[in-house]
Length: 428
Image (cartoon, rainbow, N blue to C red; front, side, top):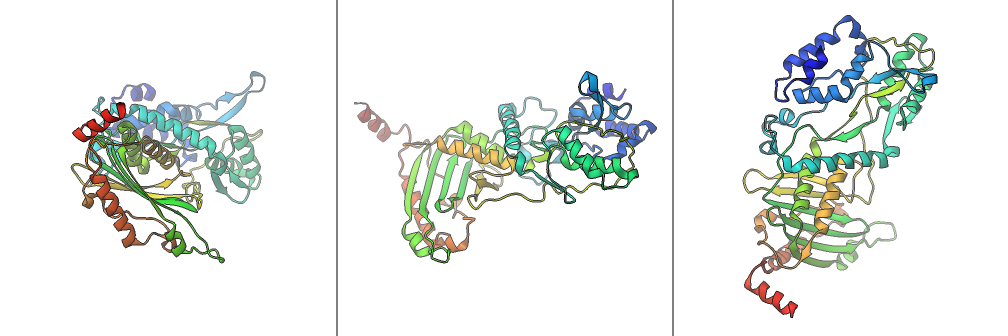
């Protein structure tokens, strides 16, 4: 039986043979109605197939043999099952030229990346919470009568039942079934597998934080020791009568703040770990979903072309949000760079990455530094993703960063004789 076969497969086994077994089953007469969905799984690894199977793939296939009846004992109703989405596998989906590839654990390395298991659990919980908070912002488009995802399976089934009434009698079931595809819940999910925790190198973060009152910032953080060097150039937008920015007045109010010290290494590494995986996450249906079949409606499906899904074509933005650029300057290998939205994002993975970065930065303890700052060539001029009309003057800002760098270079090293003498003086 296919269930036993899949269950006993080793995670590192090639998935091709198991995929052929599944496809052969779907082509058999009993399971031809499964063609009503265009989301037939195409796993890139055995671990992805097994995850899909346990998350509801088996329940989905079983429903074609007999519709499950759910509800109160006195009022059981037949339900249609929507299968979960297949999840990509890091080890199989990442490209050979991807700079993240050296960190990816092979599927036959069960001890690799164990230090990130707690981070994975925290990310998954954050994604679930984010979806609940953003539920009302999670829009869907289908014709003109469906504007958002229903909060329960019953509500979705009822909404789609009303929608199908506009279809011809013979195609109402398919119309209802297609409608459910637009209503199924999606949650951000990490790819299957693990990457090793980033342990060394510098994380350099630059950008504007805030809008009307803001700080143009750049910070360098050592992943090995937690050494932290932060420069902030703060002001508030001064506006003309027509609403445009008075750049001269805005720049005249700028104030500098230079800090050095150390941050939590664990928090810093987790923040970078999530930023590295941010682009690898996907919004998918994690588990099978059961929807009550409307009264008098019988399943009657035909193979359909892929259903268009407009749910991920756009994102809500706010003028209070800015973009921070980050670079991981590694001890060996090419640097990796990316962006996050500050102070939060409507994308769950990006929002979690930003939150973790904020936690790491808030852990800064001013004072001595465990090591010297990176070289000026590694630091480079920060890139400000802001409107050119109110961006800081490039040359002037660069000179300010250079001045901050000279102060960073003079920060006392933790454990130095000067630091020990200062500590003794403070304890008297």
